[in-house]
Length: 195
Image (tube, rainbow, N blue to C red):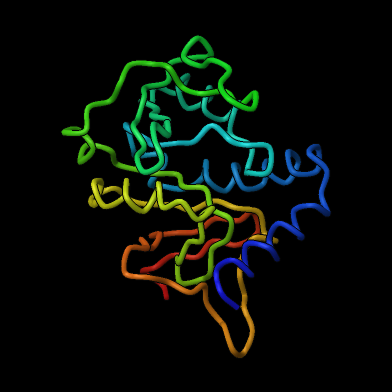
């Protein structure tokens, strides 16, 4: 299977769940994430403001801010680039295109990307080696090239884990794809140092 076929398969799996079911499944993923030592130790964290079909992060982001973490959210600015904005509360969001909330907080300078200790990264699918399949635009892969020292945790639902088949046991990768250090799915945690 190629990347497009895997995306199609994952979309089909997602359609089997209601938004309330996905929100419920998100709780186990975020509980596991909360127990992760990298999250507990990090001060500056890249998060994402979830889309309806992703692990629901809205309330969790506010919880991280209350715990004294500096939370950064990505914003897509053109067809190729993401920038980061600081999130301190709901006032740092505005409704954008397609009724999706977008960060409008203080711009986080590119020269400080090496200071980001932890990135919580969404994806269409992940495999147990830490390979990530995004939506196909390459935004995260390009950004992650700039934040090389950041520890990367991919989070997803269990049904997004790619277990493959005999002909395609892993997510196909290219030179520009960046592997996660860990993947958390709610009932599974895969870590690159244990593979």
